[in-house]
Image (cartoon, rainbow, N blue to C red):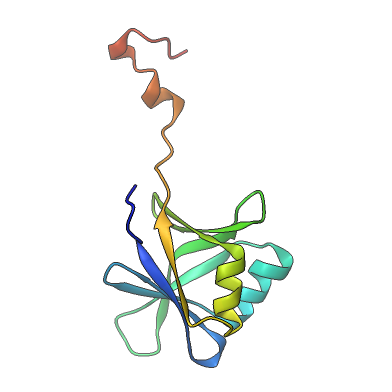
Length: 121
């Protein structure tokens, strides 16, 4: 985990929210933002495909169990942004906000390794 932001969330055209992680741009559609904030559903994180106007699903976005944060998941990497900040950007009240990496979850089997004389049954 880094003390520096992993990326930025920007207010976009036609109600979209653009998410920039390092050098890659993703987006969340306005319909999906409604499902995320008001229904609590997991929604797809879209990335521009090889052809113009073609998008592919690259990850997912969901509310944290507390409802106070939004988790952006791409493969095994997770990022977190306060729900209020993302909502402010989505509504156009703020132009952008930063977000940070979450530490990777380590499974119990990785913590208690048989090579370290731990039990794995």
